[in-house]
Length: 193
Ligand code: SF4
Image (cartoon, rainbow, N blue to C red; front, side, top):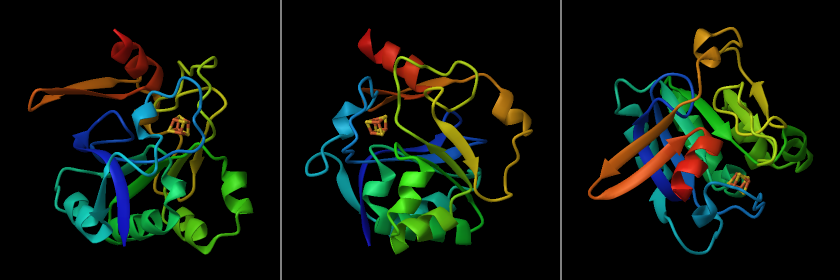
């Protein structure tokens, strides 16, 4: 099983609770205006194919990492690969957070075994299109006020103090390449400078 991956940050504190292995998939047909990752729209070019088993092994090999966050791009455009990855990560005892542009209702309406399998192994789901005109300045990790944070398991609770901390942006310089990740509105503003 493979996933087409645009970017990996192996240890970040800006993409979910605690220190996380963050993975951005390649390909998104939704194309929300103002999306901060338009280079990840094309499903047929960009990014690289990775074996899911190898990705899961990298997550589980990081002792300080609390869990995996999957962003995009659109994770549910690769539901089989997503389901395989999140199953292996959760079987290894780590948590899973996924950001999708589809609503949970849209995902359920697909009646897809792969989608349901993926949802069964996701602890936290942020859903809905990104609406640039409605930036969310209050909730951590959430891009716009229409988006919802679903607690699909009891691994996390809404009163976890980490959920109330301010949004953060990380800048990372690796081999001469600057990458920015974190709160979408702020990350997008920084990229435009
Ligand atoms: S769903 Fe996410 S990746 Fe896709 S266009 Fe919207 S904000 Fe960008």
